[in-house]
Length: 386
Image: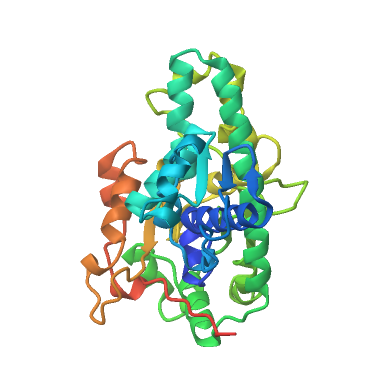
């Protein structure tokens, strides 16, 4: 039996890397406001910020954007106009309107608002929702504009992750937790009882024959574990299914991937609507075909490590969970509440089963394949402090 390991952003987050979309957007806003303060104004494809420094008494020299949260920035969105500044200069809320923040994009405004309200956001999903709205209204010019803004966001994200990854490379994983994770990913297969009895005490025969690590991240964090995994399971490979930072032969794939979604059919009338649909991006490399060859070659079990199994990857995940060769699915969960005594409610196990349930075509198959919750299946990683 083989093993397919799905690596998602939760894996990077468990290493202490600030790779969430919320972290990215917050860093972007900090840089925007710093440049606006330094140069008097900042403008790009998504927004425009002006530093309203009409007199030195009004300017607040004590602002430290590095300490700001999303909420500090969001309150400026589409604030008072230039004509209203004289009124606000005389008010007690003078510093609140030190900046004029105009959103030029429906996408960025929604992303900022949801980051503030829910403390997280799914950029790809929000993009898809707006894309469907514009397509239904036949607003081709708006679709083209949205795609240009989405592509600009992709560039910003790549710049941000490059910086985050460089910092991570300079750190070391705690050797104990690294060993724990390697052991977990290479543990004996979840085989039928009769097969285990045949093998007897020779547990080496219960190990997976081959491992394919399907990395959905743009980073290469998993590469730190690869040599150790190969020592146990020599036939181990990694496919960076969504590409890598600064790799022209495997460029990053940033978009949406649920072809069964109700509104998807409305997108196919315009080529521009398909520009960032993942299906068409996968065909630019051999990665997807190599992944399909693996899951069709032999029975396999799935280990979900830090992947939300959300709808933006539903088409690909359907090839995994609904494949006739898929034998079992194990979820490596994390202790989201930080409880000393771990219970199922302390982890993200239940939420992940909801997401996976949306992918399975037959819920009876999900019940058969999904391995029940166990406290031994926690995703535990620590970083050695700098």
